[in-house]
Image 1: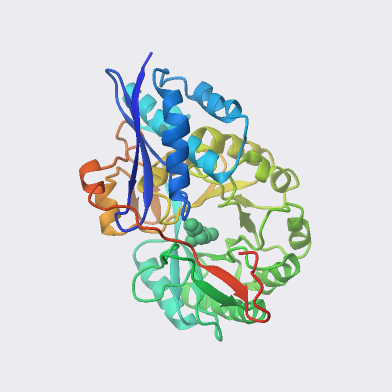
Image 2: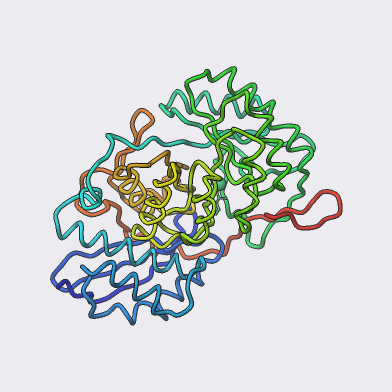
Amino acid sequence: MLKIESAKVIVSCPGRNFVTLKIETKDGPYGVGDATLNGRELAVASYLSDHIVPCLIGRDAHRIEDIWQFLYRGAYWRRGPVTMTAIAAVDMALWDIKAKAAGMPLYQLLGGAARDGVLAYCHANGKTVEETVDDALRLKEKGYRAIRLQSGVPGLAATYGVAKGKLPYEPADADLPAENLWSSEKYLRSVPSLFEAGRDKLGADVHLLHDVHHRLTPIEAARLGRDVEPYRLFWLEDPVVADNQESFRLIRGHTTTPLAVGEVFNSIFDCKTLIEEQLIDYIRATVVHAGGITHVRRIAALADLYNVRTGFHGATDLSPVTMACALHVDLSLPNFGIQEHMAHCELTESVFPHAYKFENGYFHPGDTPGHGADIDEKQAARYPYKRAYLPVNRLEQGGAMTNW
Ligand code: EZ4
Ligand code: CO
């Protein structure tokens, strides 16, 4: 018995907002979990401190599965991003405690390493095709073997996923949501030339990826998938919103470009049809938004039955605690595909010290007992929460909201 003595929720903004859960045990180690839900941070903080923490005190931290089921089934109200992010934070902290208590890095408790390192992709972006390809060449020099290419769209003032200045893009960039204009026609015209130039300059051996950010309709996505076939993408991500999992049947019927989806999923039920009908190649649901290590492993096990590999979300709004947990899971999974990596700023890195390291295109979670990531609470306290939102898109013609 490793009794949970206290649990606290830490909300801070070291470079961007993060919500972190720290669980302390009586005479045992503490554990840390990430609870960040970009743009809706305080809802998860309240769910944890008002509704979960009181239920945790006195429980045995070793009973990870039982606590997961207690929080999931016991709430009566299942699923949803707020609930599943809160449960994920508890789950990460408990796995951290168990691995520390065992004196082992987390991946050893998950079955041990199934590979030597974790293949990761990074983001290259620029206002023009030329700028994006130059950025990608720079990242290739740094050792990345897989690179996502996102470029500004001629005729559109702003494009999500493309930085405004010299710094990397920040997903939540305004105190109230910025409203951008979108044109699928302009976008669809611009992407093939980006990949033509990218393949030409970067060579055949670099994996190239692209994120549509849910902005197309199924038939538009089918056309894009076809148009980029000659450039052999590793994947086309989030071509459409997957509220209707069946919409992927249409895309799948038209293109051999591999498909990835799921960074907004929070449950195995969000991807059941997509996986069972083999409508996708990579599932992106990750530790922090899909119920923690416990639930994500279940999704990965289902995916493995249908030749679907993992490609966990790894943007900057997922804290280094999530990155650490994701890397332990990645290292241990039989059907791991690739891990997204978007570098955190120096301030974030210093508030969240971590054991994971990057070398020659691959990450390793490190061999520190636990998941290897922590929070410097004193430093975190110096950076109070600042409201920040993702932008929204409206169609250029007519001003209706796009799917995202
Ligand atoms: O839009 O993490 O693949 N990465 C992405 C990210 C997401 C943000 C949302 O909070 O699509 O940029
Ligand atoms: Co994405």
